[in-house]
Amino acid sequence: QSGHLTLGLFLAVMALLTSNGSQFSSMFREYLTVSTTYPALWRMVGFMNLASDSKKRKKMTADRVTKTITALEEAKVKHPDARFPMDTVPLCFENLSFSFAANMYDAVIEDFSATFPQGKSVSVTGRSGSGKATFIKIVGQVYPPSSGNFFIPSHLRVLHVAAEVCLWPGTLAENIFFGLCASQGLMTDNYKKLPQKDLERGWQVCKLLKFGKEMLDEVQNLESTKEVDSVPLSQSQKKMIHLARALIVNPEVLVIHHPTLYLPKDRVHVVQDGL
Image 1 (cartoon, rainbow, N blue to C red):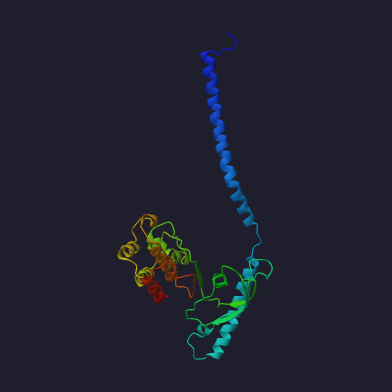
Image 2: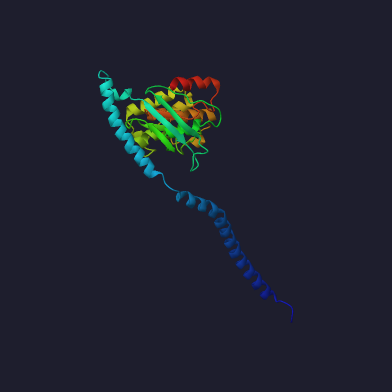
């Protein structure tokens, strides 16, 4: 009759609506995915298109090599009896300035000069906002200076260690040795291929930092497949792993932000003695 649906027509219409509704629902989910991803993707595109400082860094590296050659010749003259004259060359900072802005009106560091001898521990202290972290990042070659000069002999390896703890996905042994693996051209999970003397030195560093028995056993067990995420670790234990892998790499210039951050008082002296 007119104005009434048959059961068959009603079921057909419902099936059509159900089918189209599922498609529209799927399209809406895809739209939500794109709309939430696009802003982050656009920010990444903008970041990747920022001006690069690669030319400045290349020039700094070339100047560093040239200055090192000159400094070595001068060291041989000044210290003719020294077995390694290059070890007498200090790290120099002359009129160093840095600003995050294009101009220098808001300089974080301004006209800083200092000389540090090799083989010494140096602490950078000051009030909050005085530029301590920025200076450390310049020494660690994270930031190039805005102006001025700094000289670290080119044969000295520099390692920058951030204050924030970051553990690598993998075993405890992989976390301890991944920096050493990278320096020797190995994949991070190929720590078993490291020379025995390097493994033993790494374990000795862990003992120096007073790793607990369970942690030490796990680091020494090269056959273990237990992921670090499955090991219950306190923040101070994670910090010790963070520091141990830096000491294992054994750079000539080790730059560490807040080396005792997250550590209880009884652990602070352990790190200080280890450094």
